[in-house]
Length: 300
View 1 (tube, one colour):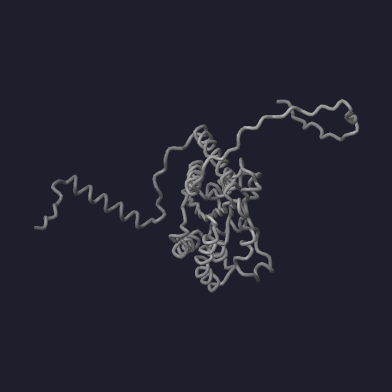
View 2: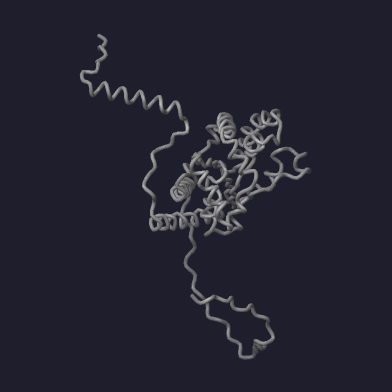
């Protein structure tokens, strides 16, 4: 016998239902609603956890080198979303011969005439290497599409080709990991303004960045369609909530470490040998060399 649906037996329940309905309406009206902000992470806690993760990255580096792994990590997202800062924290303790960053400039006329993926293929890793792409072949369905640097037909061809291209990479033995850094409208505006106000960071703000700000909704539509075609089971996108830079960095690095099973192959601690002694060696006079002068530090 089917159970009857229970009606609200008090005004409190009715008000609660009304509140839920109102919340649902609010969510539908603004699809950019984000999770409630967590308490700011203290610098001390952030640096402590970052140090732990960077030690693990060193272990991962030894594993990649020893096992001959080929790793590609793609970093995409809106301008000022924190991709570059995260990449810096990943690489600052690692060997650039093993873990390298690829941030390609605008394609030359020759490159524009090539197969679209050709210039990216040249930077793929050999055995024992990890490559971090600070923007990648996903320029086509993003900035190139929104700014009109490619045709609708080229975008359509990209969506047909990229799943097969990434399948080929994975079948060849490449570990492919894709991150999308998501930043809110308000936080992007704050970061852009901070760059304008800081002479040491003004170079990070280009006319293209400002135009992307104006075309916020167009970028949102382009990103949504890109995900529909390229967020596949074999090669999924992992979204990093990036309004909190510190948490975003820790979250991304921790997740990256979890996606590549590794063991600790850290070499044994080396002992420093004694310095060579040769009584027949005579050092040239100090006056024969040109030294860098001391930097003048004004007294406070």
